[in-house]
Length: 93
Length: 93
DNA sequence: ATATTATATTCCAATTATGGAATATTTACA
DNA sequence: TGTAAATATTCCATAATTGGAATATAATAT
Image (cartoon, rainbow over all chains, first blue to last red; front, side):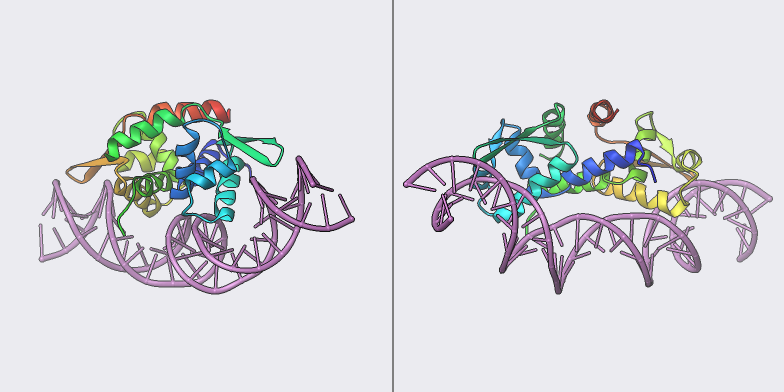
């Protein structure tokens, strides 16, 4: 069965529907980060958990990656994320 | 355990992570609608399914309702929804 | 009171997500 | 080649979501 527009949007929202992955998004809103920096900032989560979170966000196109030696750098791949998060923050404050 | 900001945001995104509920959001972006109008527009889904979809969206504060006789009218309760959907549409086009 | 219309809820089996633990891959450098 | 550091993947038991079917509620009119 072929995916509708809302099927694809639902996948994007599903990728965002997890607090760990939202913690990652928050960090990337501040600019590109390597995995090691993300792990450093989110020490409370296991390394494989963060790695899987990044993979999920990447799989729906929300973030992109770039390799440099041993490091992998991730950054946001969708411009309107910050605006929407700011809006949600206001509503939830 | 007490909910963090990102726990609450995750719940909002979870509510949005379903194509039927996104179909409902699309309709409400056009303005307030009663359940009967939503059912009319989304005939392919069962009535209880639509009712549950509305309940889920309301439970996280994305939409609000208003009763008038036998009818219940729903409308969006978050201003930045349209803007973000437009952004996603562009990316997914 | 009863019937009708509009909407909501409950129950449930099947599917999918979650995160921990162990393991694998990739790159660089001695 | 061998080792270490950075990152990714697989496996798995538990938990959560999904949507259909049946049923319930609420408001109005007769």
